[in-house]
Image (cartoon, rainbow, N blue to C red; front, side, top):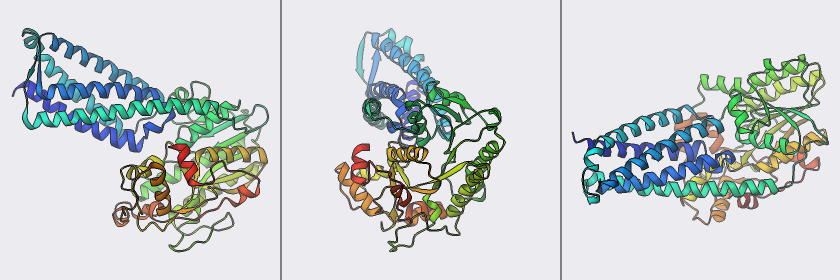
Length: 482
């Protein structure tokens, strides 16, 4: 087989793999355009994508002779350096999921193969007179040109996202400091590398507190927080003499994912209840007890609210005998064990947390594509909270001395259809394309209740305690984030 044609075929495969990696990992599961720490990674991606765009389009229909062949080799050399730099930056700023690591490995192997094949032709091309020679490759060339256009658009998207992250960083730096306590305090934070945890740790550091992070990846976490937070891999690394004023427990495996099989349920329980039990045991053995344990939970505690039921659920309402409700109830019971050691315990029942990471980017994707509309009928209630209000409410509980369970939701609840209608209006997109719920129910089973059912939850205790929301309505929350 002609080695040049084989190289172009491998390039076409590279385009397909790259599109999957960009759409599935960078846009959906990792939401890099909204990740505050991804600015450098996105800048590298943008430069690589624009280089690949020129290479795909150029090699689709032209042959590089003479000095043009040398220029091609130099461009590939730059691409290799950028790829290696990208690997280093990724390892320092985030923990890649297994599928992304596998995809990157295959991309690196495939890229090395087609670069090597093109290099084999380089001596012969260098010996020819310098020229760009028209040499179309039929359908393969058309596909490569389309890949070039697509990767070019992706590069511009990443460049724009990197610029936006820089502007957000400037805005955050100028934002008023959230006060968790008067004077310096010592905080232990679990789940600190997640979407919410990162924001909490940075808010604590900005407020002048000492922060210790419990994480499975202490080295990556140390890089993530610029070495300003102490990072430990397990509670065993913390001696009983260690003193913490407040423990913030946010750890928990992502609830949305594979079907809730027995194995998956065990993982979800261990990551929440098992870790919380370990934290409470450490508190029991500690020489100096923290004054407060702030422990995460979710409004899934209330179970599923029947369609057509507009009852407003407050902290006085009870759970239901279903998995999501049991999981939250057992999680709160585990945290409540710290009360026996004289520790004030506050459980935070999170609604849908809106931010540049988390679930919102995936929820808004169909809206951005002009396909937003009611999901599964759209009558299910959706209770949400802006991530800044969530952090503000946590700081409020640290200062006010509250205990018990608190609903962390905005005062305004909407149906799913109303939510998408507001989002479409903010994004200046059409609204109305309905999406049936049965395919999601078929794929996810009981887990589909998280998307197809809902709860109308009010933050009664937060409001009664005097907390004032910055974003009480969805429209202003989305305008701030988008």
